[in-house]
Structures are given as C-alpha cells and as structure tokens.
Image 1 (cartoon, rainbow, N blue to C red):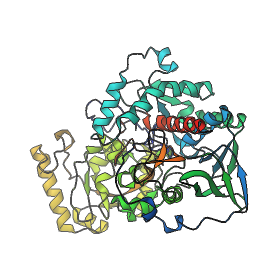
Image 2 (image 1 turned 180 degrees about the horizontal axis):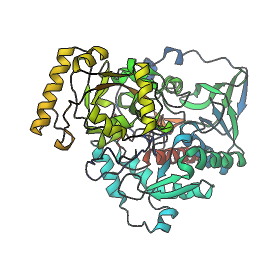
Image 3 (image 1 turned 90 degrees about the vertical axis):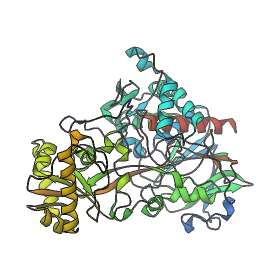
Image 4 (image 1 turned 135 degrees about the vertical axis):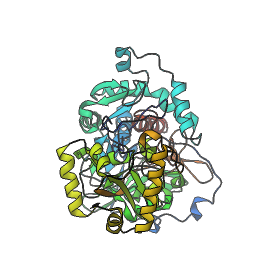
Length: 533
C-alpha cells in the first residue's frame, strides 16, 4: 500500500507461499513500490464493444457540449497531473526541447509518489555496484504473468522490465536519491529504495527541479475538465485555473497522468465491492473526473478489470504509516484469528493474505460487515506487549469499533450478529483445531488455535481504499484506444489511469514494479509525443 501506494506498497517476489510468524512480521507499507497513486502499466485489451460515441459515461456530467472558454494558450505537450508518471513525462519532454505545460489540480506536485518507497529495476548502476548482475528478466516476467493467470499483456511487461535499469540510471542522472538496493521482502535484489523510504524525499523534489530547470510551466490548483478533440485527434485540454477561469490549452499531444478514481466510491462499487463500510485513505483529488473526461473523448473503459490497493483497518485508529497496529497488519499478522461476516459465518482461511497482502480485502468485498475475532490468548500474541498497541486498542473499545465480551453470546450481541450462529461457528472452528484439520477452508494446522480464552474481542474491519489501478485502455505507446481498438492520436494515458499490467488483483511479484511503470509509461508516452512534433 504506499502511495500510495499505493499502495502502495508490499511488492514482494515470492517463490513459495510465505508463512510469516506473528512476532516477526515486517512492518512494511502496503504501498511499498507501487506508486501510491501513480502506478502500473497498460495492456492493449482490444474488444468489440459499441462505438465510444454511443457509450454511456460513468458520470453524465463528463459528456457535455464543448465548454466555453475565457482564453486560449498554446504549447507542444500538455500534461495533466504532476505525480510520479507526470513528472517523468514532463522531464523527458521538456529536456528534448518541447514546450510543456503541466496542470495539477492540487497545490503542489508529487501526488501519490510522495508515499512511495522505491522502484523496481534490473540492470541499474546500483545493482552493478552491488554485484547483482545475474538476474533473469524472463523468469521475473513469467512469474508475474503466471500470478495474473495470463490475463495481462506480455509485451507490456517486456517493455517495463527491460527498460527498468536504464530508467533508474536516468533517475540517478537527474539527482533522484536512493538509500539502497535490496530484495524488499522478496528474493531478488531489485528494489531500489528511495532516500528516507519516501518518494517525497528521494524522487519528487529532484524530478520537480529537473522539470522546472528544463522550462516546464507548472499550473497548480488547476483542474482539467475536457479533452479537446479535432477530427478524432486530441488537440488540447480545457482547464479551470486557480482563478476560476476556463482556459483552453492547445497542444499537439495530451498526456493524462491523474492517479485513478479510488476516491469515487460509486465507481469502486461497480467492481462488486461493498463500499458502504469502506473508507478512502488515498491522496486527495483521485476521483473519476479524469476517467470521465477520457471516456467522453472516446477512450475505451477498463474498469471491469480494475485492481485495487486496499487493506483492512479498524476505523478511527492510526493508519499504517502512523504506527497503526490495527491498520494493514491485522489482515496479515493474525492468521490464528477467525473472520466472520454479518451472518456470523466464517468465510475464508485466515492466513490466505500472507501469500499476497493485496488479497487481504478481496473475500470481504461482498460482506455487509466483517469482524475479526480473537480471544485473549490470540490478542496477547498479536499485541506482543506493545504499549502503543494497548493504547490503540483502548481507543477502539471506546469508539465501539472494537467489541469486548466475556462470553461468545455477549460478543455476538455487541457485534449485532446472531448469537446461536456465532456459537455454532466457534464450536465448528474449535473442532477443527482439535482435529488439526480445517475441513472448511484448509487453514494450515500451525495456525489453528482454539478460541476459548475469555475475554473475547471482535474487531470491526473496513476496507481502506488507497488506489484504483486501471481505468482506461491504452496501446503499447500508451495512447488511449477506442472501443474499436484504434489508437487515439495525440492522447496518452500513463501511470495508474492507464494501468493494465494488473487485472482485478495487484499481484506484486516484482518488487517496486508499479512505480517502475510510473517512470516507464511517462517516458514512453513523452517520447512518442515528441515524435509527433
């Protein structure tokens, strides 16, 4: 998770399913290496749907008559969004001599990149200095494709992985600062860790300076509202500037790098996620504005395959990066717990997310409400004597997001579930513990811990939504494509908005791969746009 990343972050390379002991679990961010809000790559999944002009947009306000404007400006390339991929595109294009305007709806550059911890690469100078020279790019790519059930595009992975070493060298040449190259929690040393573990320190200020030095014109507090289309080509963008004026910026190419729609729960719910009990914890401004703008311009929707960075948390308690004991960790570090839905039914083997932490929320999506149950013995293991954890637990008890009772029946009443059903679930689970065989979901025997030491606790957990990965379909140059599969000339979608290297689930087998795509997609789109000048 960690822009957030993003989630953001948990970008591991895992040869075999990993078993993580509750006492030793690494407090890694679920945005590690994922670009927090600017991520991933793109798969040209070409399909035969209705023409874009006949397609109902997600937000009817997105498709309107051409906006009236108060003035016009001209440049070579206009970039929408100044996060990780937007900054990479800005530097690439401006240093080649293009006049670049970059509009950013927030008051500063960085976006989700501020929370990213590092980036993937094979063949970087840092790795050469460490003697890491024998990595197989083919093996890395194969592992990712297999984890994705072959639902993503191989050539797009080839581009990202094979360009990754040169991309990191390019960052180094532009002053980006790193602490180390390591394996993160994987097996190969491919994770290039930013200074202070933060893109806000190692990446953003240096890339922003490089862009400014090259003459990029940044416009903050400026919201892009509409792509200008002329004869099927993108020829500019209409924005609302800081003073509230509507300005049409004419350009030969438009590069959209806007960070996805995770803040728009109406959109998120279309992926069969129950958002009534969810909380948005990503960067501000990541609603569906850009998605709708691109759909209105004729781009093909990818949201049926959107993947998400999200984790379970107890509402109101500190987040992961604030030292939260019950944010993210509760979904992976308590494999001996019992997870129940609103019907007091157990619905999963509770150690499942140790293989991939981004699976953590998936089985909870259909639930109206999810509780994680622990008895006192389980909780003692989980808390590990940490005073800050005790303080957070007490805050959760005071708010009612954590329930405590001396009997199973009383706990059921407190959680609002059927007492008989919960008693049956606990009895059934304990019988599996006694038999060392989870006949329902196959949890490994080492994690089958009898639920019987009062008092009992019920943690109401909610999905903390960080990033929506994949919004618009693009081709290999990161041009948006139409429903007919044709590239839209002059219109590029990079970072998270055009991400299609992941489908439905972020597989995180390449440590820092999502952020590698941030840089790669931004640079590739800029180079292609430059070729059109």
